[in-house]
Amino acid sequence: MDGEYDSTTTVEIFGQTYNVRGEGDPNYLTELARFVDSRMREVAAQVATVDPMKIAILAALNIADEFSRYRKERMNAVGIWIEKTEEMSERLGKIIT
Image (cartoon, rainbow, N blue to C red; front, side):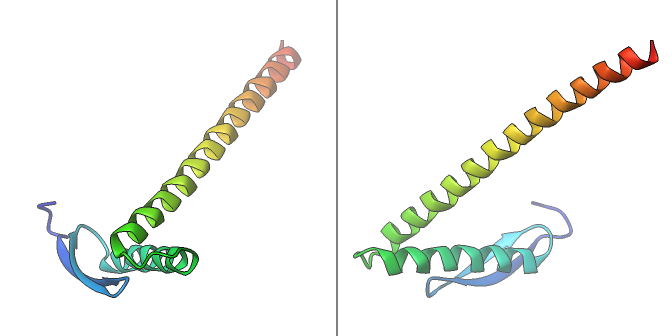
């Protein structure tokens, strides 16, 4: 992260302020922080614990689960797309020859 776009962005997550350094648009970091904050607040509303570390871990697990499901769905869609492309290619090959 030594590029000219390195910047420090102040964000708030679950009542704590963090200075986050990163490349690119600071608004993107702010958006990510809001997403994490909202997930932590959703988890906090559903569990008995008030320990921010436990809430953060549960929120991270929820986010990781969502990401994993999305990735699997995407891989399945790519597989279907490849199958359909091969099928169309075969049909075109038969028509052309």
